[in-house]
Length: 194
Image 1 (tube, rainbow, N blue to C red):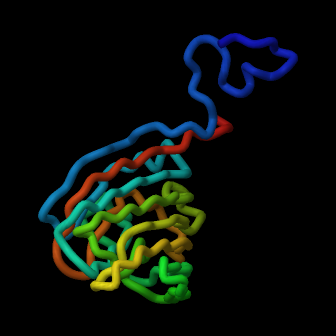
Image 2: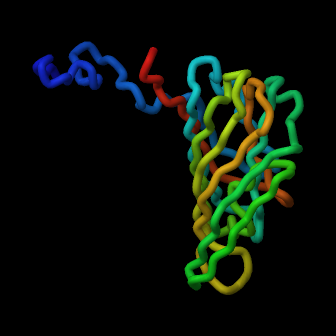
Image 3: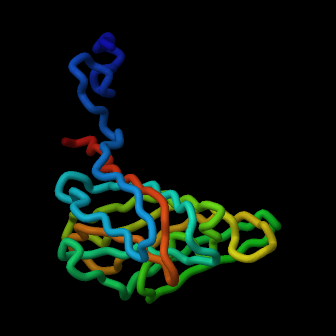
């Protein structure tokens, strides 16, 4: 679509020539997984994107599972597994709610005590992974059926931080127990100033 320049269409990425608009999502990686206790996403292209978006669908293999987000600064050879901070609100369909958080944990909680056998979803943004002068932040949300037999569903929303300034170049999702199955996509968010 070509629009008049007086209305700024070209500045919004609508110009002819297929330019990618700032803020658009560019797929970095996607995969399915099954029977694993560790889903690694290597090469998140932190040198190209300062904001990442991920979408993970968990489709089974365990009940009452808590899944964590962990980070690596050496391409996945090792993981930090310490000193993460997070805070979130958990709301159940039975109208109960809980505040969750920690100032020193081995990963950022994506969701807590969810029945993966009935499916669960986690989405989030990661900020400043490639900037060695800033902390790496996470903000996100998750949905799923609460572990146990009461049939309630749960929604969690919050954020976390790796409270050290370094370059994060690999992430992983891992449960506190058991294995996971599902699929993920991770995107880079196109910078406005590139």
